[in-house]
Image (cartoon, rainbow, N blue to C red):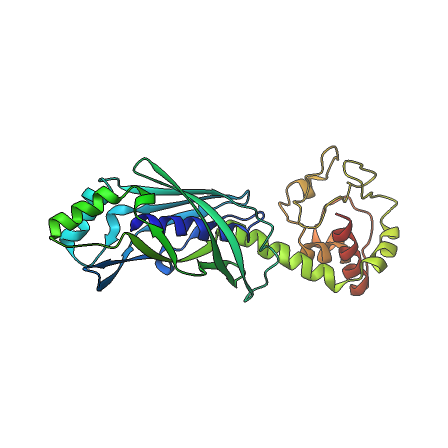
Length: 312
């Protein structure tokens, strides 16, 4: 009964990984649910769940989910205890580990959904199980993803190595039968880690401002910069290389001797900071060595940033 849900979890997390080519995500336990069903005496159906689960999905496709087996909730205390002792063999945790292809769902916009194939492996009391299923994935917001089972997952108790434990439950409860196939449903909500969310937000802002300009026109504006700057990586001139300047930290280009003002500025070259600097280098950062007086037209600044972003 329990095992099926675990397997479902693995699939769900696998789906989530697709959203995160570079981000990491943490399971929101309060918004998530793993449930499984059982039938006794052929006619009495019951729904059970696990109250404590945790997990992460990393940008490289590594997924890990942990289920606290001691948190099983069957709504009967003695049955919870018997489940732990006889079905789960007093094993406190179950682990799900998966390796995910991140490319399939990366393009989803907020509010968009898709169905993806997912595979997972569950480790429980020395047993290792595999699952191949479909998961429904929806991007709730830029920082939140929800993954659910697309259909009920039906798992066989024997495949999970739980037959002896179920037999013992029947004996203790004096039941004529407990179903040997359990339906499992899973709802997992993942939140992007805050640090990653901040980086993504900054990246989004960069893209939005870059798109506000015309990179082709920006290439022409860059002619005003060529006397001092190059766009090639590692090639400095009178000024530092501007390779991947948008979104980078100030004063960090290797091999260039910066003014104290820039070395101590601790700036991130966001579009906003670049815009202010390009409009008035000395006014924005007094004491820097840049001799250029600045661009006077806002459109030229937007076009130049668009060009710098596209070339980076």
